[in-house]
Length: 310
Image (tube, one colour):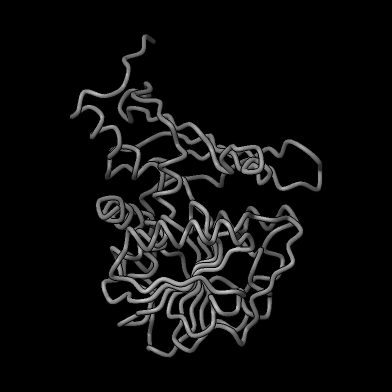
């Protein structure tokens, strides 16, 4: 995770300086017209890292009930000199890890100094990898409060994460408010919903808190979003492109800056310890293309993988 965070910091700085080629992701939506299924194509080029490729990723919220993952996908890397494909790999693990790492990049520039209490809303895959990333990036972290709508998932999360992070005081709370109020960093990691019923209110977010919604505007009420001192995102172009579809982000505040602009030192991050900040992390292709070459390097070094004819 530490290596992935390092790579993403480089990628976001490159993006901030305008040296990343990454169009907004197009998507299709199988199933009922009012459903939440999606399959997205996510291409990106990061010249400084020699990384080019595309991820084809799906999210089907009903999959866990069938014993299948909510998120799955494949990723293709290409040689930026010839355009030829160099690797095909699973994207499920990469998606989980790079999303946590992106939260860590945001926390390093936007969380208040000495942040000690983390709130997690949603005890699934992203609830796990975001804790993993923040445990690396925020050494002052001491306590985790986690909530999930499903008590069995929350109990499993408590068992696994307590064993993995014995230095952290981890407890399951009974309401979303308990996982938000009084926390220095709050991550919401539920499914993305086209017809959400958001529950997080403006008064819940503590003074000095950083909120990181991974699930679009599904869980923060518009008033809670508007109450932030500044509103950031990992990609303004993607947010505006998605909003133009008329479903998501219809009541979000004006974006102050992209995370890449902050990482590059071009826009302010946190200015004062008491500010309430929000960084809506949409999940973007540069995160995948920064991570996938690391996977390929490890595979080649260990003699893993299968050579395929072209």
